[in-house]
Length: 91
Image (tube, rainbow, N blue to C red):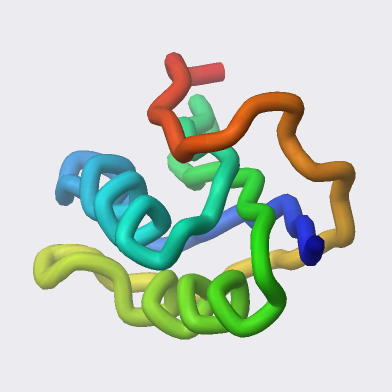
């Protein structure tokens, strides 16, 4: 299993990015979570088959129609404790 923590920057809040990411991750069978951060970025934990995680990362670089992603920081992470992909509260 491949697991990564992402910090996504750009115009990513207020454009439906989190809901879009939940749908995209679920369709690919990726587990984890996504949430807004008070600094204007989005943080996510994504885990699953390497090909699915990489496909989700490619999609995250584009984001939903109204988003404008300027950068994505990636770090290795421990996989989530539970299956599925959820939206968490802002931190």
